[in-house]
Length: 252
Ligand code: PGA
Image (cartoon, rainbow, N blue to C red):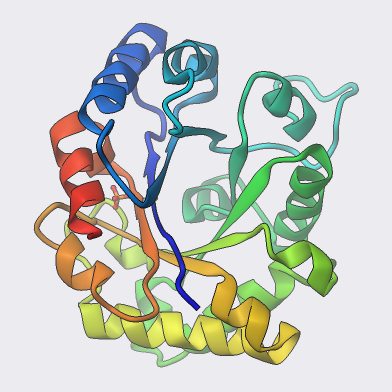
């Protein structure tokens, strides 16, 4: 089954409203002729309204980098899927390794947030990936398989179709060190095998598994050429229109 390529830009804690709007404007212009590829931008929360105002009918989607698992209430400082949907987001990142490592995100939290996003109409992208120690210890596939199973534990097959998985080896994020296309393909194939064991062929062959970790215009073509790599989650290289657009164009 043909899976449509998906290129996502995770701007992390960069770019306020004005500079986010400028970058989004440039991308709307530059990517107007992008063809058969899905593109989504994940600005920092404070910049979501500014980017939303620019994206208009461009077809470029808007996502939030982090949400809680509840809709509203006495949770000072939190973001909810319902309110992000109201602000124009259609997507959300969940379980990014920076959240897991620095903010204590747990597998149970990832599972609960996934359900809350689906309930609110946000399409979740679940991020998984092993640390360098785990890779060196030979347990990378076990760790990633566990993270995928745990994230999906609360989901029946009829709700899984809306998900995207992003495999991001922690040792490749922001380090300039990319997994080789063969290393990445091997893990993507493993993730798809886990999905197959949980939900069967139709879901496993239909879900998109993105690669993330120091993707650049130089590394993108070989990564995106792998049969089980369906796109990229791009951090650093998504902060400049030229490099992000080059990665989008590398996908076909
Ligand atoms: P990077 O970040 O491209 O800067 O390595 C990717 C990510 O963390 O999503």
